[in-house]
Length: 102
Image 1 (cartoon, rainbow, N blue to C red):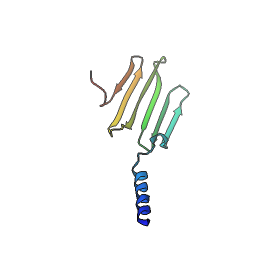
Image 2: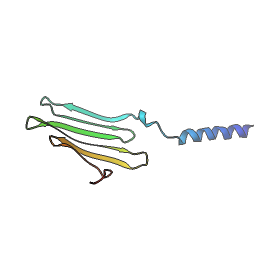
Image 3: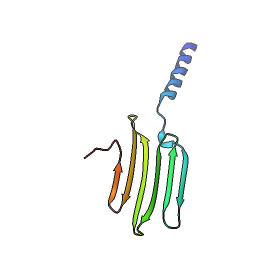
Image 4: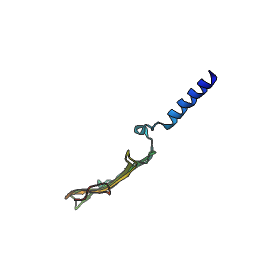
């Protein structure tokens, strides 16, 4: 009986150690946000599961809002997804190795 209980204990322990972590509860390890009087801003954050984002925004020629930034995360298949983008008066311009080329 003792052998059965010990085996059961180690099976339960193995299961809890091997199951995937709940990444929806990942803590923020770095965060920065700054808004300037002229309307420009910068923000950045990173989580313990290596999700990362940063962006800066400003007015161009006093009338166009421009945003430049990037974000990165690991896809479920293990691929690192990184997107760099600009958004301005000409639209949204993403760049990333995972995006189709057309």
